[in-house]
Image (cartoon, rainbow, N blue to C red):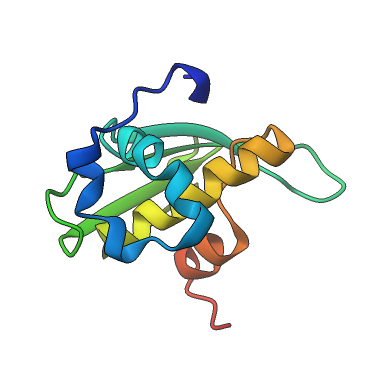
Length: 124
């Protein structure tokens, strides 16, 4: 799936997330919600000095920003390389916005360092 083909959420759907999204990130909000509503994303984890590692992320779709979203990432098609985390849907939407910002800059579909720290439970 290409981000260019992504259907944005309606303004009404986006309005419930506005209190949780600040500044220029709001430009991506409707598209991030559109991606969120798909419940799946394929990407590649950027690894310095090595091949990028493909992943598939799947998640449940919550109704309200405060509802929990369970996200599961599987790397390289290997069940032993699966990770899971739960967070409020507004927080996950913010990570999807960061992913879209990174895609716009670098043309690679990958989550942010902050997302991976949370996924791997690494303290900041």
